[in-house]
Length: 316
Image 1 (cartoon, one colour):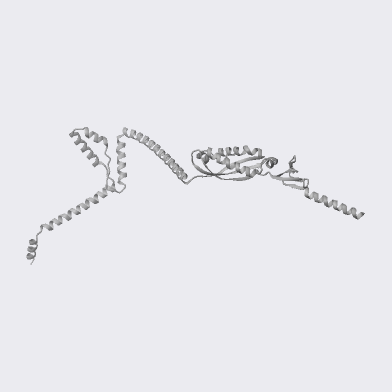
Image 2 (image 1 turned 30 degrees about the vertical axis):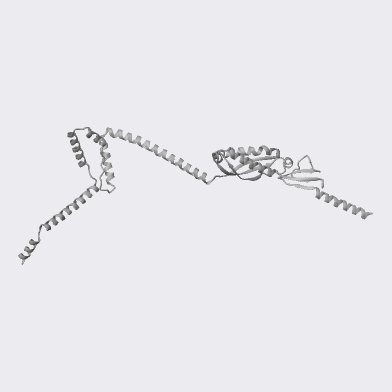
């Protein structure tokens, strides 16, 4: 009798242990538990920690509540200005209602992925190329709204959507490079034109100053002559005023002769740089030497063969 009672107690303890082991469940901190009893949803979401279910009657489904990072495959599309591009993105979302994520949609991850791809194609077709390249913040917000609207009923919240890369055809890249180069060249020409305008204003002011002081113009002319002679060239350039030519056209022959004589005197009085004077002296020495050689040749040519023979006989 006692042995039978002991066996019964041990059997009851074993059954209770097996029942407890099969009924015990542990829900992690980043998870929530959804319980189905005989196929029907039980009210209440199981919190993180230790929980019990009815074995063989209840079924516990765990839903991850962490933020999911999902890359969106690259999508080919045509922008509003008829440019073919290839765009990829990344989406960040999380589950806010575990029951809706399990009941309202078969696979919420696949559903969000497909919605992101279709929304990305739609946003490409509604945008210009310049917006895709420079105004991505606005496009990211529009893409987030397009994905978040249907996903609210799935118990999913879209946290952020980012466009990662925009791939352009090689011809479009070359065209954009040429456009940027042309824009830089335009800015350079504008800067040069502005510099020329400022320089012309300064030259006009300098001309007004020199018009009141004729000696200043003469000094500037001498400085120009010295600067030209410093380059070690044998040609001296003297600027000739155009006003003088106009004067000569209207002047009489006597006035023309007087003006030419005055210009010749002014050129003679113009100081010649030392380098030019040295070159002139060297040229004069070479001309003198050539003149002596020509005189000796003429002297030898004037003496005939007969004179040479007579000299020989006289010597004998």
